[in-house]
Length: 241
Image (cartoon, rainbow, N blue to C red; front, side, top):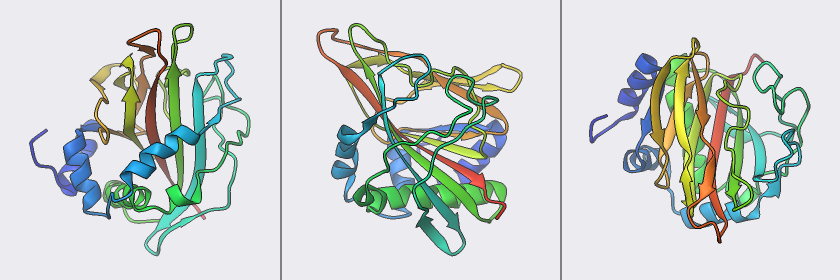
């Protein structure tokens, strides 16, 4: 990837490869074109206020999250009433097949300039890739924790698709952890790429129809202290309504 990146160039990269890794500086520039990140500090701090994910079929207590749904289209972006997150077992054999209710993303975070810039950037990019239209959008605040006695698994279901059209994974922060390597594979299982989100605003973008993705477990660098990896995951699925 070159030092400069515009939205058309990013769309071309995802169109050609099925995914893209966008370093933080370039991602911030793209986000700045669609709004302001003036509340970034408060946005990032909101990951300290997530609820425990109680649906983990592996028995793990290493994942915290909040969830929200939006509608995006030519007339703007609006939040939908709070709803369950559902994936079939075809896409999530570990935790799928059940309606999962998570605590909602707080209004101040969802309505803030950073989140609105993220959503507008996604809509712009995914409209370029799939054509303008109406989208069902879900976003997830994830904190994966790692301790001496329990590694953290960002993708406990393994290499997977999400059952949507497009996915953004945006790193918000990481503390006292190693690993967390993202890999992408085509649908035959052939590895396409490998990279690690290390800096706030490092991002991965995935064409979910063509590419599977997964992240290796994280463990604390200093076992005497807890560690965590915070990401925002945004999914766009064409809304048939």
